[in-house]
View (cartoon, rainbow, N blue to C red):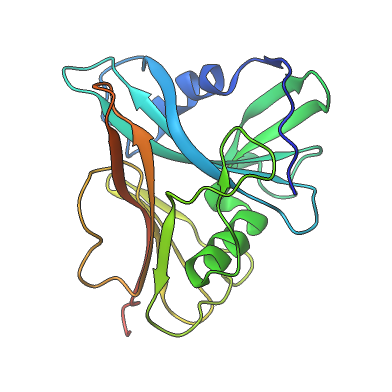
Length: 215
């Protein structure tokens, strides 16, 4: 069970993302983002070592707000061979230096997300300890997905992030959140919610499992 500490974080997560987001191929802004964190959820690491957060980062710098899905992992030491996935480091008031990674590249994140598809993991509230988030829904209609082979080939494009699982399906991380149903070809999906600028609860698909090229 992850414990949510009420303490300082310097720089903050949003400050780290302000520099990092514009470097991503799926970022659609013209300049520096203006970010808030209106929603998301967490998963627990069974070993209790890695923080796992599915953050919604809302950018209001453009003509219309854009909700980005930014999965992050938080570690007490660097993740081997993952310097390319490092978002930055931050000083936690209780835990000390934390290495913040793009979660898509972190094997703990990958394994727990696949467990969530099947219902073997429980989504947790973003800012509360030991509190399930019942707004997060999931489904898996195909065979049980297996973790990506190591090292996983993570691909970032203008449309989002993908990585293959060991059974030949594709895990697709939806980076720009658009309300609507999950894709028709999905073998599984995870849906979450956040607060819109108008104050409404907005739902969208955060991740899907789709057939591979030969699926």
